[in-house]
Image (tube, rainbow, N blue to C red; front, side, top):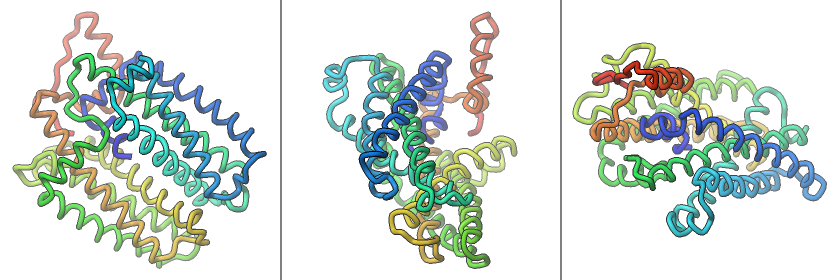
Length: 350
């Protein structure tokens, strides 16, 4: 789900996919696949046993692959022949495999785990959760694939994007900054494991909720700190933390920090409950899942800060308020068209 964070945190990507015209098209792109996914669910449930988690995840993954490719083509606004010629097999394979198949399964597990947390168990009542898992994953995949296609289209016509959300920049960073990012990941693994073990204070489903809350809070915190570690590589991460307003800190702590820390933990919990068929998330599984979630958040937080630093070095600095509220950004854009100047805050913080 790193691509989702990058599309909203990095200025060049965020501004490209939150323009008014893009948002209007995106609503249609999300609605149509969601409607089609509902029809697919209604047809498939009579042919295959969707009460089996592996069957459900396979169907959801297949629907997500088709959706990702179709939505990407809409975002690119060219024929498939042009896409294959200009983008190549690697990019298309990544889109189908990662944004489609893997991301679709993750989102389905997220939906099933979230419903399980509130007492709606898919294994006992499969119809409703199965339908929601397929539709929600399909619409989310459509949204992200469309945005990635739009970014690719803009890049080909000359709009600068220092970061493309396909993971290549992450691998390069790991090769050149492993010494810097390693301690953050190690801290995330340890803190996540310890926080998840707090579930021992409760039993049953309540224990899972305690584990989720603990991992979410510490995962969001370490993602925020690691972000400043990447954003200010030549100074202490605490410097950036103290120089940033409380309001902005809370925004980034909540999204992507808390939001994706809980997301990763729920995906892992969904895998334990519905793939491994465990009746609950035991302490051992919780510790492993918590460590994985917070370790990833530390890595991704540092990466996002590092790529934000790269964009600022290349003159991509934008007032963070514009990145936080597309509605207000649209209003300001209209004001600019009427002659009101819009300036970015020098040295504005993320």
